Structures are given as C-alpha cells and as structure tokens.
Length: 110
Image (cartoon, rainbow, N blue to C red):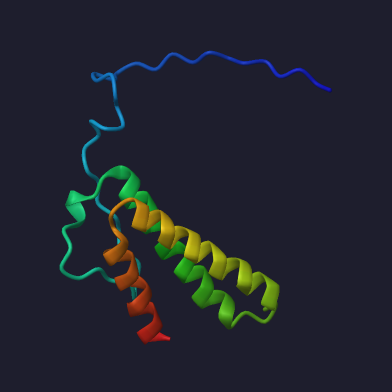
C-alpha cells in the first residue's frame, strides 16, 4: 500500500466563518432550447445553480446521445438515472418545481 501525503493549503480572503452560507447568489447561463420561465435566477444559491446546471447538462447529453451512431441502451439507461439523480438533488435544494419544469419542457421539445 502506498502512503498518501496531505498538504495543508491556506485559504485567505474569507470574511465569514461560514463562507458557503454567506456566498452571494449566482446566475446560471441558459443553453439553447431549455429556458426557465417565471423564476428569478438571481435568487439561486451557488448550490442550487450547480444542481440546475448539472440537470441541464445531462438533458443535453441525453438529447445528443439519442441520435448518436454509437448508441447503446445501457449507456442511455445510465444517463437517465443520472438525470433522475440530478432531479432529486434539485428537489432536496428546494428548486424541484424549476427542475421539473425543465424536464417537462425538454419532453415537449422531443
């Protein structure tokens, strides 16, 4: 077995004890075709923005892979499970309605 060495890294510039909770909301760029209607994207926390962005990216991967010449059913199943997992993350982060809207919109496009 190999021994791993831990390197301590000093982080500066954090004014708060809880930097994650004090972080300013971020906006999420919207890819073509998927739009969020009637929701204030500036009100998202960084974690919520991350979850929505992950869901959007997985939807794009699914849409592209459906028509790929190297399509395999097991891979599509994995992508669909990943989308479900991202949806569950969004629900836990209290943005489930927005995420479900994205999925509903994606379903109407396809």
